[in-house]
Length: 301
Image (cartoon, rainbow, N blue to C red):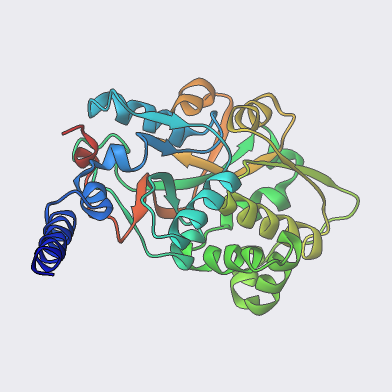
C-alpha cells in the first residue's frame, strides 16, 4: 500500500511539473505567435490591387526603398483586396494592404496608415479632371461643368458607402444628387442644357472613381441633357483615351504621384482642368489592432 501511494504521489508531481513547463515555459502557441516578426505573421505578403495601378508601382518602389527583400506584393483587384481585408479583420488576423483615401473601408473598419519616413508614397495627392484637347470648343457646356466640379472626400464617402450597402452606383449617385441640390446647382449654374449631344467618360475601377464618375454622369445626363458613355478601364488606357481623343474626359486622374508616369507621357496631349478633390492619400494600411506604426517595422528582424 505504501509503495502504491508513493508511486501515485510521484506521478502527480510529474504531471504538475510538466503542466507548469507547458504553461510557463514560453512554448505555447500564443507565445510562438507573439515571437513572430510582422513578416512571418503575414507570410511576407502585401495584398495589392490591379498591377497597372499607380499605388502598385509606389509599393514596389517602397519595397526597394525600405529594403524589404523578403516581401512579395500580391496582384489582384480592389474587390479582392477588400474581401481579403474583411476576412482577416473578422478573425483579428494581421494583414497589410495597399490603401487609399477616400475609400469606404476607412468608414467600415478601424484602419491606420503605416508611417512613410522616406516619403515613397509622397505627400497628400489630388484627384484631377482631364479633358481631351478641343473639348471646350466641341462641348462648352460639359467643359464648364467639369471645370466647376469640385467636392470633398466626405461627400464622396456618402456615395461609396451607399454602394457598399448594395445600392447600384447609378442609384447611389442619383440619391446623393437629389439630397444635395445646392451642391449640384453650384456646379451647373448658368449652363444651358443641350440636345442630342454625346460624351464619353473614362475611369478606373477604384471605388472612389466609380462614385465620382457615376455622379458626374448623372448630372450630365439628367441636368445638362447629354447622353453619356462611361468606360471602365485600366489607368493606362484611360489616359491614352483622353490623350488621343477617344475619351472626352475623366475625373479620375491621381496626381502628382500615383499617375506620375502617365502625366509625364501625356501631359502635352491632355488639358488639366485642375483638382476636383484635394487631400487624398495612398500608402500601406493595416488594422489598428496591429502593433506596428511604420513601414520601417516591416524589415526582417
